[in-house]
Image (cartoon, rainbow, N blue to C red; front, side, top):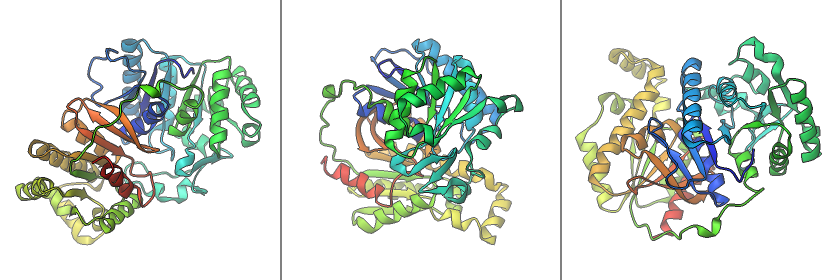
Amino acid sequence: MSINKSTVIVADDLTGAGDTALQYFKAGFKTKIIIDNSEDFSNSDDIDVWAVSTESRNVSKEVALERVVAVTDKLRKSLNIDNFYKKIDSTLRGNVGVEVVSMFEVLQKDAVIIVPAYIEEDRTTIGAYQLLKGIPIERTQCALDPKAPIFDSYIPDIIKKDLNEKFYDLIDVIDFKTVTKGAGPITLKLNELIQKGKKIIISDAVSNTDLEQIALAINKSNYDILPCASAGLAQAFNKLEDGNEEDREELPPINLPRLIISGSATQLSSNQIQKLKENSKNIFSLDLTLEDIIRGQDENIINKISENLSNGYDVIIHTSNIKNEIHNENASDLLIDEGIAKDELPSKITEYLSDVVYEINYKNNFILIIIGGETSYKCTKKIGSKYLQIIDTILPAVPLCKDINDKIIVTKSGNFGTPNTLVDIINYFDKLK
């Protein structure tokens, strides 16, 4: 993979597309995140890096395969680009094996290298086990993900569960002992494994130095290798060669209220929301209940949100309390009465939130901050964003974007950051006033 060529990033959710594209932007490359991948693509804007979400993390393996194949083939032909980066979740959620192999086959690469480590977010790989803050991912909150729970930490087994048995013998590992020796030995190991017929190669990494050496090894290899990784490896690639950072425009003052939408069910998101509420005196919080979601849009709620934004207040709309509410008996009865299965509830929530954004978008001008991959996709698509152009870095995995209508939009994964992340995002905008 050559960093100085145009690149296409294919992610399974929108926040993943955004945090990976951001690593290229930080190196000075002009990036665009595609929202509506049904559009015809052409590079009329001299884009260096394209990022697209297949929205395939929470669908069946069959649908994920179909979407990845279609998007990859379409972008390769439309943009005449062979340089691809498969973004995978750093906690291995979703249809990782299916997506990696299907993309590899469409592009006819010699092999794929899977590098899920993301050091800034404390995601490391050792012995082919994926760890979050030093804990196997199956023992963390990732195991409780309502749509894509994790039941294993050993990456070869995670990959195998998605694949036909004929692929099992094609999987191998570059261990930490080799990685610590640097790019030369990693390159030799890569070449050796590929010569032996291995197609799916997993690499350990516990530091940014490891990721940089892996990136260098991929570039040095004699083979055409597809990187399948978190945003961490993208960051490492972009340390190898800079783009045109000096051409970046200075941002004008942005003095607008902030509408914060969270459809994330993670404890980290709940902590971030609580921290923001504790640290802001200028915020209106709408704590949604299960009954709100089932009842649907309420004109009084829309008017209250609009009124607060008009008066210069930040507004946060979140579903943090619902994850606890659905475990009580009354909630279960309510879902049964409405004919809603528990696994259908997350989609109901994102639909509700996107409808709110759609209605408010007609009434107010605001900065839109969205937490959660599926929520980000549904909200931006609902208001007709079509694409997001990255214009600045707020935090290492949080891009500042504007859409086709010049609306300022921020997307953030529900699993990323510290308890202070939302406070930090608001502070960033306060400095732009």
